Length: 326
Ligand SMILES: [Mn+2]
Picture 1: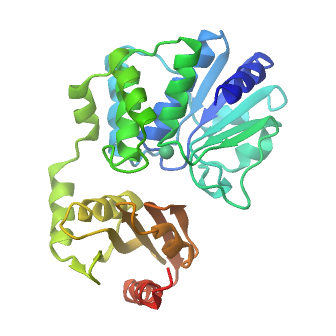
Picture 2 (picture 1 turned 90 degrees about the vertical axis):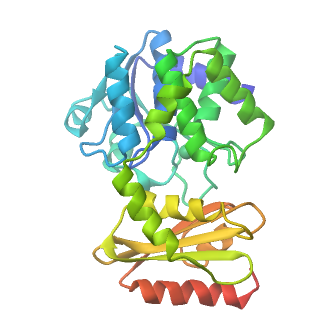
Picture 3 (picture 1 turned 45 degrees about the horizontal axis):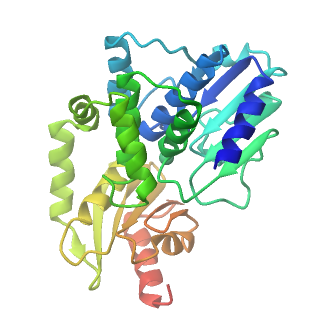
């Protein structure tokens, strides 16, 4: 990985102005890795801004931004209007934590800026974004926080304790508390973030959820059932949920005895049904989601189906599972 770091440093030296963006519906891994990269570029005396969605749905991200304020850590956040006014010829766009144009909150940005770098840890898509300067996709990384922390380490740059905390929380989210995609290096990165002052109390606050939301999710989890010896399923009602709700439910189902893979199905838009799939690693849920036009990782995948009911989505899922060839 050191060669990528050298390459990045070389590229960064050629620009003075940078825009950083994570993926749509930013999560803590996206935010944490963007903040870490912001720090690296700032230490190189660059002009850097972070693109931030107007409406932030992820409560952990909202809390993280409040914490930055509280600890007087200044980061330059901008909205899309400000980005449009930037020098598109001489600014480098850095896309972190996705390489899928559909997952950019403002896809036009990718065309707008003439120079781009794409860094991601999700399984590579056929139509991956091609950064003019560099595309680096490594699905063996637990998270983009892992990547950026290793880069910080390489450059001997520290982040402030609160940024370290946000980064640690991001890595925890992406690994489902060090249960998936976790390697010895992931723990080393966690240790390095702790050495920089990452704080477990703040981290817990960031990861905490509102009790109402929790109770509502638990109600659905109670209705979950095993669809075969190793797989659990939860189907939600007709309300519209966030994709992250589905992901959390699927993840929570993994804690139960015998569950090796779990699925949560629910409406995520007026005409869209989402399926979130998680596995402890023994069952390849990515294959199952791919068969439903989705994608992801072996232990962490999802799909979105249009113009189907929850019941139909469930039937499709069961049919693929029952075919048994996966
Ligand atoms: Mn991530």
